[in-house]
Figure 1 (cartoon, rainbow over the protein chains, first blue to last red):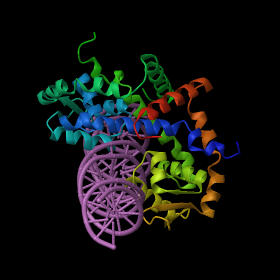
Figure 2 (tube, chains in turn green, purple, yellow, brown):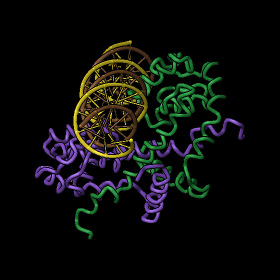
Figure 3 (tube, rainbow over the protein chains, first blue to last red):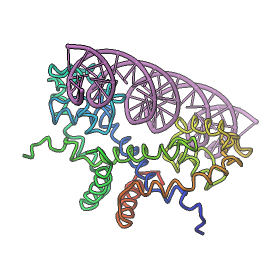
Length: 147
Length: 147
DNA sequence: GTTGATTAAATTGTACACAATCTAATTGCC
DNA sequence: GGCAATTAGATTGTGTACAATTTAATCAAC
């Protein structure tokens, strides 16, 4: 046991459980997001808009680690559903400003219960959760040019 | 500070850094995977095939947390590149057996350096890496019917 | 003040990822 | 044996993700 190819075993990878865990948890949001007709990507986008009320696509992308290629269709969908408004900045026409609508604010009330429900689905103690959170942000923080 | 909507702040989520971290690390594989013409999904699929030499799509899906909707096109692509063979099981025609080809085995040698190179990109101590690994598998293990 | 570089979004093309459905093979049960 | 239920893959449709390119607006230098 332990040949020179051990490093290529899936069980020796750190990225794989990260990738799998992320997908599995995102999948578990579905039952809670379906009733308010949001996908996970739309949900985290709304989270930022709920916090900021008004934000550019660029700033949104920086916070969410997503580029315009992903965000443009997501934001058009959210506008179509009536939760945000898309309009060019007067100061700088290159910037697209995303604004929360009244309907978008209404949605926030309905989303309020989701984090608690999801919390129960992850079977970690408070300490473990904090540890995991800290390690993940340590990695994210180490990447150049990111939050 | 600390209103009833704090739970909806992106900075209070555990899933979000997991999702972001997974994406950012997978993205960083690209420079190492491009030379051997594999995507990340194709790479982890090959990892299992390198280990098993012969495996059904079902078993592959269980290990990778992927379903046939994702794996079918990935495996067809890998077959097209000549790294695996797809053939029905004689015992049970429902099973599709994935077999490693000589070219697929050759590829393993070239992939050998990738884990070490990627390791350097994640700035965690050995202890932290082990902690993170343990926490991720604890979550994955808590999900019903999964590895 | 004009032009070259930079920047923000949008667009295009490729590759997942998954729900839902479909098809074919096998298993259970009588 | 015969048929319902189950199982493995494939297919279809929707929605990301992201690289690469394009377009339009702004900035920078001179």
